[in-house]
Image (cartoon, rainbow, N blue to C red):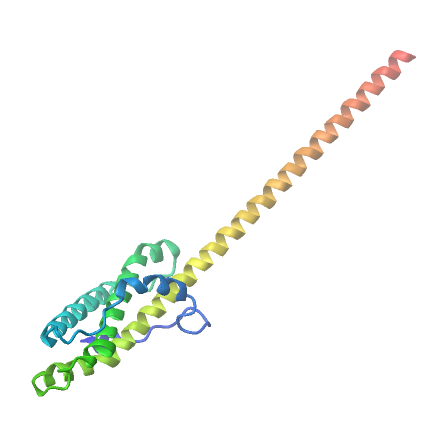
Length: 193
């Protein structure tokens, strides 16, 4: 079940994985931060928490990737928070199974062998799922960047059009002024004769 979530997705950019969304992911660090292991807390509680976190990560992942690939900014913006939440749950889960639970004094106890095996079996698919979400974040950031470039180009085009129209208006005004001056000189010359 978790293996299916780790299917690869194509990156919309030639940049290295995660480069486009690095700043975005940096801002999310506080949301998936987990405390160091406390041996005074029963390992069962950690495993229950890790199971809940995995459940939430999978739920968010399934919801996120149930829709077709997003290619426009309004769609990417609409799912932005869902992508962030999915990423945070996967990162929290990853930190728990890689950095926290293995440090617990009872981690290698035969009593927890089944949970340890289950957890170890989910590590690679979990990392692949994180990578897929990062690719999605990169894609969304590339879409946002392209939209910003499009908007900037549109602003420049409008500004150039405004300047062109202003130049035409000024030229027409100058032409009209010169025509009036010429007409006034002609009237003055006629009166002088």
